Length: 264
Image 1 (tube, rainbow, N blue to C red):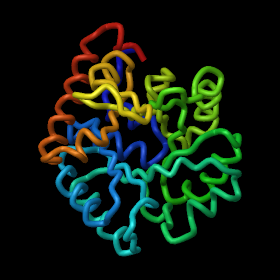
Image 2: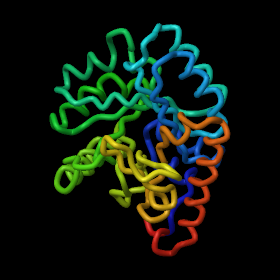
Image 3: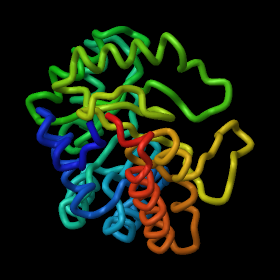
């Protein structure tokens, strides 16, 4: 069967966040996620506003903000609604089920109240998914499993990655996809989001390894590129976001004309 368009894939999904994201991607012609790793509220809100028209997902690290206040969350949600993108808190939960339930629902960040999407490591076993699901499922939230990473020397490969795929299939009503470097499953319900994307650089001094949109989308078969410093540190983040949106979408369109990548 040929590679399905996003609206057709949305029909196969039971998770509301997965459906919403797939429709946003098709409507905006965007498979771009901006990693907004900034330290102040003003920076985060400005980045959300100027890149909003070009993105399908805004990825946050809410706990690194030096001036966090609860009213930020309302402002962020309004911008997401205005520009139609998904909020993804990159918390990377990695504890037992009972603990992650509290980390997800309680505390000063109250992540489950505003983040459409979260992610988790599978190191603790399937209990971590069950714990997060108890909080997020009733809110229509979605979970990504961290199956692979873009840093040099990471241990997320082989049997670990395959275990993540198995758990995703087992909990497919809540797990909507993966953080990975490539397409891991032929099931069109699952989305693949790939970090470490940069048009100009190949890496950084701390072991980050970059790939181009063409490599990630065209050759590796992923769905969404995650771009951080290439946009956040650009002189004009708005213009940079549009450049990456165009590059990511062009890579997707090109791959759809390649018979070897049209098979699902």
